[in-house]
Image 1 (tube, rainbow, N blue to C red):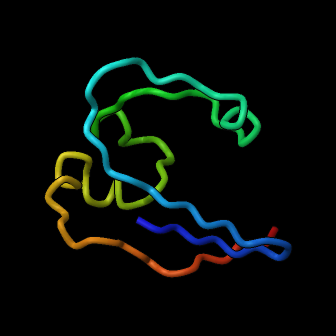
Image 2 (cartoon, rainbow, N blue to C red):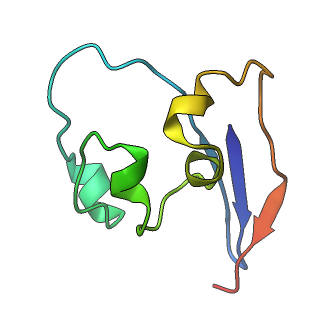
Length: 83
């Protein structure tokens, strides 16, 4: 999925990949902490129900069904921000 956000002073483009978990524990990096990411982990749909999740398709489609999407690139268009 391509996520594009245009603000007054910059434009940010994020590329999200769907992957299979093989092994290991997720951990924060210094870069993630600078962005305000405070926790990394593996979660199921039920654990994310009351949370803010990006990209939005994770909550609208559900984690289990994301693997069934064989449409290639998903690009919902540019979002605009007031900052």
